[in-house]
Image 1 (cartoon, one colour):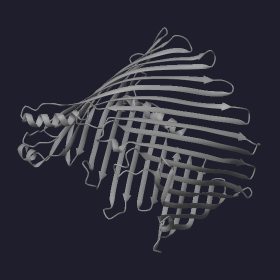
Image 2 (tube, helix red, strand yellow):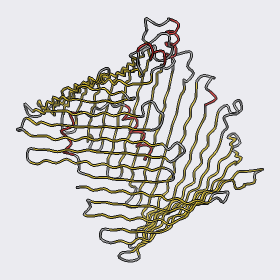
Image 3 (tube, one colour):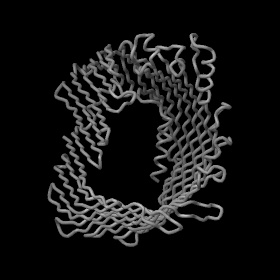
Image 4 (cartoon, helix red, strand yellow):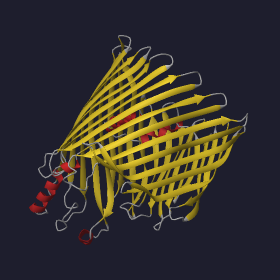
Length: 631
């Protein structure tokens, strides 16, 4: 079910237009909870620190808001990679009267990375003066203006920020309700220029309590200018160190959503149709025709996508079921803009390279999920996903045309044997097939089959709680033309896993906990026609962590040992021989403090004594500290 839900989220989120989080939303910070959070983690050679605070309060007519977040990652290697990110937003407001609210906002964002990447040092600092005016009920207008400093590639740009936002919240006309959102924002930071445009309007028509139709029209446009290293010829010709690339994205979305609930007292139906057109312009500020490459020509991307989605839900006393269908088609075109100063031969070469990226893709998905209560003690959960993708490229120079098929089916049965023990078993199968149309890529064609069988139980008694599961899985990947291409070889991967999580109460304040698992895995070459395998690698993995826990009013203190072992074997003439060995053992402790459900502190750490296959030994400490205060 988790995999199917994740797939639904990915499909849905990919169809949504970009959401702007901008100055219009500054007045909503009062709805956020007040929290102080700090987290430090050290594992192996990686150190991670995250610290932040969020506060919003109102004192009479004065409001205060603070948001701060700091991330730091340090990887201790020969190069010592360090990456820091910091965000700060501070605002204060004054309620002049019921219709006018003034606010001053200060913000600062910093990125620092010692790696030699394109943008490893950047910062944005700004202050804004905003005013929120509510001339009539449900209508809010927010003009704003300010000043900003934008630093990128060691270039500091200063300039003004100004614009206006507006929101109309559910203006009702009989059975029709209108909502709208508007944003106009400019950043003039010469020689760069950034802007955002947004217009969104929705019309909700409620025919009855159970039948409604929502029509939505959305337009958005944004431009961002970026610095990047200029080549030597361009740098000398224009006396610059960094060139500028502009990325402007425009999108138009028309969507109609119809919902019909409770027809025939057990069915609910929703239907969505969506059309989205998007255009992306990439323009380079300084160009030389004598310097061939990407900087000579500007490019455009046009994308047209049409979607249809429908879902049917059934709800009765014994089961809940839903069936969902999604079909969409996307047409993507890459264009090259002619540079009059560049030779025609270079333009044709670049144009052909961009045309090779053109594609038309069609996806169809079917999703089924059902919970069936066979009795008061027996329950069946069924889920099914079937997805097909067809990817076509018009260019004769592109051989990526392919068909992809993915099917996942899962059934789980559980029975409550008595008030203390529940038994469950589950079977899951996955089938995926990728077929490249042209022979140039057909060596990548393969079929993947995965089969999992899981069984176990859960016991909940007065002094003892335990969950155990046993799973066997088999993964078979078969290449269509492995006889022709020796670099592709069909393989199998089979695994057995046994896991246990138990908690035993020794009285009012003491408990014993145990968490652990055991895994046996085997990988080998596969002959699918004869369904025979030749193993070439075997793994044994063991993990156990028993602990003694002492509970007080605000403290949970535990201590124990942590064991981890990993052995890998290779086969020589079908004889399994030890190849590598990793063993780790050491004390582990955890301290949890909770005060009035507002202050939560957790310290978890363990000390490892590590033994490697060559009997080399080393020691290392791992720490995880979390502090959370909801004030």
